[in-house]
Length: 181
Image (cartoon, rainbow, N blue to C red):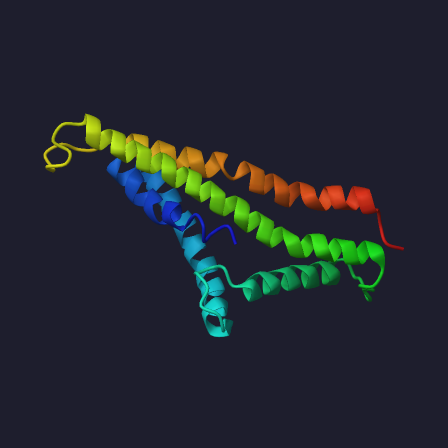
């Protein structure tokens, strides 16, 4: 789910690293990350486009989030050797509601993060056009390293909150609700 909002960062990281004159090792790493993103995105796109009856933006099909949630729940039930799940008990029902809400909350947080990162990038590009003589005419080179730094810093910093949401919610719900007997 987090792959779609950060699609431009993944797609451009390798090119930016190369233009900034960074080592070949960094380019290999960005290519590996891009390949992993491409594989995962292809699976999500296939489900979105084949099973969506509503014209939604790429990656925003509710069926995709529901399928992923169901698959994760099925994997958990299988791994934990749980034979029955009574969804009518209050603890299980509350857990299902919180779990169903998480993909959407996470999506909103990541989309806001992408907007913030994009705004920082636009401001830097404007600054460069205004301060670097000859950039508009194509006679001067832009400061790629600063753009790369903004991109990577924002992608890491902005994902702290969504990452904490995903990591801490199961712990908090488990502590508050306890175990189901």
